[in-house]
Length: 383
Ligand code: TRH
Image (cartoon, rainbow, N blue to C red; front, top):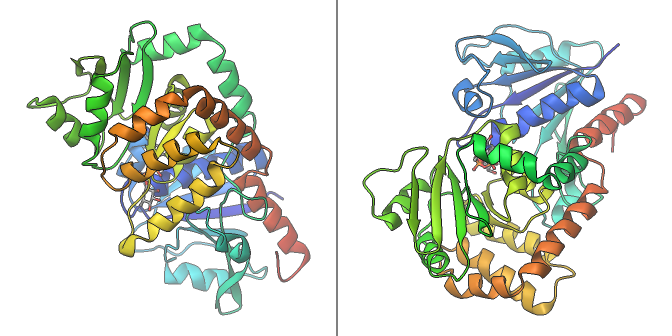
């Protein structure tokens, strides 16, 4: 019999919570024949990346996933074989009772945030709290073999490469979005939180000898873009040119289209968690705007990733990349580091592909979760 999975997603803010759980749910159904219910407390955020979602429905099926609205007033329901609490969300008390009442105790996991820090390796798979005999486990995504890996659908890299080797497919995709870059222009995408350092970056792009076409999906950075352009409003479809820089506002596209957008670009500025991983699978150089946390603990995460990611780069290219990422995450001046990075463009571009291929050798996160479950069936302590 197929295993039944319940994934719980509480949308805290932004799109990462639903972005990750929706991706995981789809993959478990498509590649592992799991029966998946995805419980989401905010269907509006979900609708942005999956326009087929009907926000009025308590229950609907999308791409084989049973999407359930997670109501504040929980209705009794059977517990599944595998229960995933995404990003430490608190499960409904009645659901926890239902888990404890099952004859076969479910496997209960917390799907944690992504981090490249060393301690993740030691904590991945360890037992966490226990509720009436139901043990919860930590499940950490990560970049090293001893972690839970990264979300990566089967055939993703092959699909990406085929797309990138097909100029017509790229052109058609861009044209459908109303994007017509001038020949030879550097195409870049920008998805970020508010950032006071943006103006310095746009200044240097506008003054560059080579044209840049910057695509900005609707989102939090638009206010900074608008201020720099000095315009009253910035709606979807707006195109503005300043010197060598063309800025174009795109709609927030469905999740699969966002992948293609990343594949089209020569450079992607991304943020949070899921877009950050997708930009790595695009095999192109990237800039990460990390989600800010109290007491600047996000800066440790940033450094940990940079240490791993820059391995194998020449010292000069490494300095350029590290400086750029640190400036961006400190709302700092981007001028010097961007110019430095341009000097190492071929190297950082080749490096992005190499990093992607190396990461692609590891088991993907959905497969790792399924393996963890299968092992749990044979022992009381899955590890
Ligand atoms: O939206 P985010 O900032 O989410 C963040 C992070 O997950 C962070 O770790 C978490 O603590 C915080 O939320 C609460 O960035 P992220 O993770 O990249 O999620 C964005 C999602 O939106 C991702 O799945 C890609 C998707 N997306 C689209 O589908 N279409 C678009 O046009 C764009 C720009 C993004």
